[in-house]
Image (tube, rainbow, N blue to C red; front, side):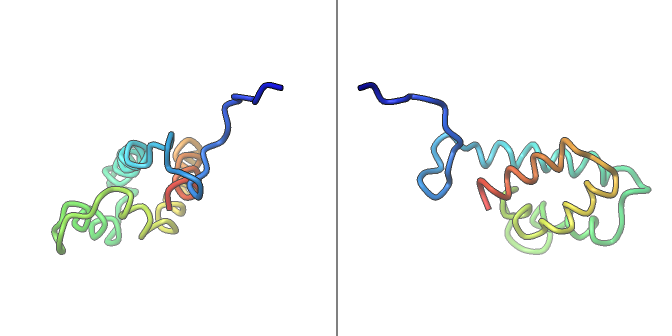
Amino acid sequence: MSQCKCQQQPDRYVSFEGIDCNGNARLLMAMIYRHIEQPERNNAFWDYFRQKATGGSGPKPDDLFMIHCHLNQIRDLFEQWEDLEALTLLDRIEVECC
């Protein structure tokens, strides 16, 4: 009787092995900046977000922390501009890493 060596969905509750939380967070941050660098998509919150992400209001947090702390605002941004690719990655990060 052989054991299946099928590719299984990573499960953060078992192990973070095979989950690139930091790489996916970096990619998502780039997607966020792609939006908020456009003047019509920027506002006071995103100015604060940008300052916080660079350590302007304390120690510089990592990308995953920034995403975790601002999941709802990030989701709103991507939904408003109908960025399905970014929403998919956000959902993946939320499930696998947050």
